[in-house]
Length: 81
Image 1 (cartoon, rainbow, N blue to C red):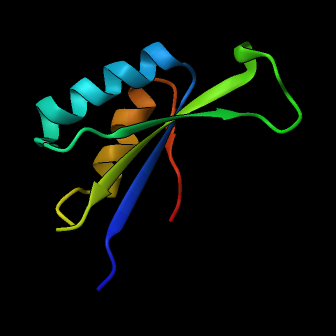
Image 2 (tube, rainbow, N blue to C red; image 1 turned 90 degrees about the horizontal axis):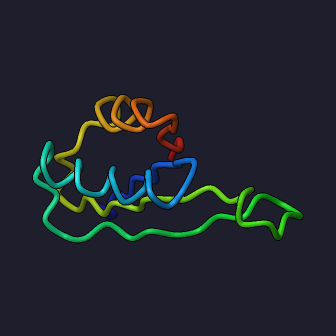
C-alpha cells in the first residue's frame, strides 16, 4: 500500500504557516508539513504565488473532507489526489 500525501493549496505564505500550526493542533500531525511555493503558470511576481502545504499520511488517518474544510477556512482547498 502506497503512502498517502495530502496537498492543501493556500493563497500566501503566512496563511500556509497558520495552517501548518492548525494541522498540529487539530489533527496531531507530528511531522512538519512541507511548504512549497507554487508560482502560477507564467508568473514571476510573488503576489501571484500560491503556497502548498504537503502532509504525509502514511497511516491514512487524516480525513480528506476535514482537511478540505480546514483549507477552506483559510480561502484554500485540498487538491484532489
